[in-house]
Length: 247
Ligand SMILES: Nc1ncnc2c1ncn2[C@@H]1O[C@H](COP(=O)(O)OP(=O)(O)OP(=O)(O)O)[C@@H](O)[C@H]1O
Ligand SMILES: Nc1ccn([C@@H]2O[C@H](COP(=O)(O)O)[C@@H](O)[C@H]2O)c(=O)n1
Image (cartoon, rainbow, N blue to C red):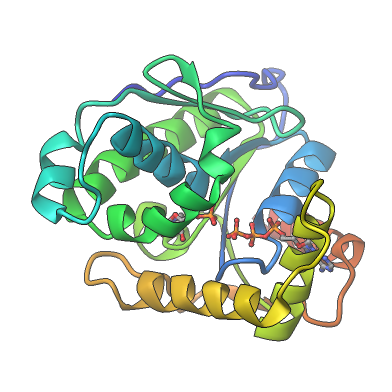
């Protein structure tokens, strides 16, 4: 798989040392919205690692790989070239050159991604890609915010700052319900079904053997249940600025 850093902000020669931030947490806690906004505010790169697992899942589904057959998924895991654009104002994701940004958000991909991401060979390939992208960003830009499930524990255990976002299942279901309602034809959202789907994905992601969803021992936990998105962004910006001041 190829690591390509696109949309990076070049770092001026007299700039402070770059910062690497890991943001993890369960589904719907606000990782993507927060990470993108924080990276844009601070001039950092941004990597959505969930989009990479979704892209490889989409590639498997469209190339006839049986995603319920871990052996078949493992055998195909090195085939697709996944490329992530890291500009927080316009993040991109392609699989073998095809734009995957729309298809990776379909219910079919969401339903299959936890099974694909649990396969150790998939994790090894995607983790290597993530480390390459983070190292390149740390070398050539002001730094990067990387969000996912195992960034602080496995992918970047030496990150300068680790944040673990949480929120109640009810708050997360309501947020997802709001997103669904915004789509034409999705007028009636079943919040209970949404909540159950979130919890099912969390359970699968937390219980897999290889690199499960987990809070790193040295991560700062932020419960976003009663915070607005703007408050969470402000909180994370402050944590990063404090870290940079004391580094
Ligand atoms: N603190 C918040 N208050 C209200 N809504 C929020 C908050 N944080 C995020 N949201 C909204 O909740 C939804 C889910 O957020 P987001 O996609 O950032 O979560 P996520 O943790 O990245 O989820 P996933 O892991 O499933 O991709 C979005 O519609 C977002 O605008
Ligand atoms: N570091 C990560 C990130 C994601 N996953 C898997 O991808 C799925 C989709 O993630 P989203 O953030 O886009 O919802 C997620 O449910 C995990 O199965 C992962 O394993 N590790």
